[in-house]
Length: 455
Ligand code: LLP
Image 1 (tube, rainbow, N blue to C red):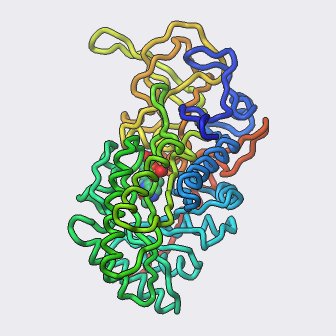
Image 2 (cartoon, helix red, strand yellow):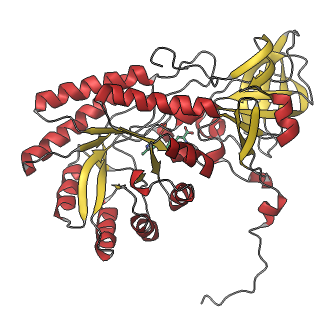
Image 3 (tube, rainbow, N blue to C red):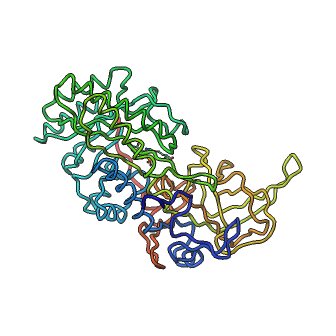
């Protein structure tokens, strides 16, 4: 497993027959794109189940090889449903949730509460109570307000709650500003540099209902620089050393978050767990040796790196048009039957993707094309510029790989679009694990209600 971790944008069991540069007849885990769409409709998220298992095991193995143990938490926000939670339970990994909804999904899968950690920068009292009553393993405390809240509720419930403190190590990562989380000017966590981290530790230690087991950081998402992870780990170990000096005992756990980058286009390469985890481990071992600390139990929280490449979105082309640009060139607009409601990432972060013909190959010359969705927004662009064969037309299928993370999980009902289904494919068979929304779902929230007195 060490040498052949899949680092391209494709899931392991994705194949094109009659392939050329722009695609061919696509099959995923032996299921043809045409049959999938015929059976389940489009747009559709197609999740390669064996690939999900392979990636989860790889991250778990890398952690075990480097640290002789540790804990992998899968970041539910990247994509979760009851079936995926069942897989994770079978794979014996932990789950990072950050809302009551994600927690409820895990519990609906009978996921062991002890293996869940509860995140979030603004957990409500109701969420904290629900988490404590559900006996989640760890609550990751994000602010002073929350520290008092968790302590109070744990106390009321007669519980001693295991907690981590989320710290911001002041690492500036090279990723989109919206998904960078560990610089100083950010809503998450306690700053190490400002001294807030130390104050939070002292407050936590003074609360009888809190068991401070470790510290946490998550420096951001879609990160490729191993040095950023190493720097964050180094700064957290300095905090562990300061703790030992002050309290004459060691904090046993260190969670270094997720954020490992994946490939979205042909010229990108995912970060491999067998590259990044040993590098971080070496740094942690060196720093702990320098500070004469024992090596804490390490946990990580990848989401995207596991589920991102497992999933391919298949769209049906609806309309096309040629547009003459100011410089005299032409661009072909290819409209698909989804768009920003199933993938907000291009509009929100300028995220880049590749697209492939999925129902046939074409030997037509390729022309400048733009893939757009069906929403009433000019910004509803999935891929602003891509060379695709000139004969792509209504009725063709287009596949966009690497849409498993933050695709369905950030999907919306904009323009009253039903959110697409997610199917899991394996050994030539497919089944829905999240069904497509229908009109009844969309109308379900509409009410005709008598007004209530509010003054
Ligand atoms: N742990 C914590 C505390 C997090 O906040 C996140 C992601 C993760 C782990 C998992 O990060 P990952 O390994 O999946 O990169 N919607 C954005 C990403 C937001 C990430 C939020 N937190 C996107 O589509 O790129």
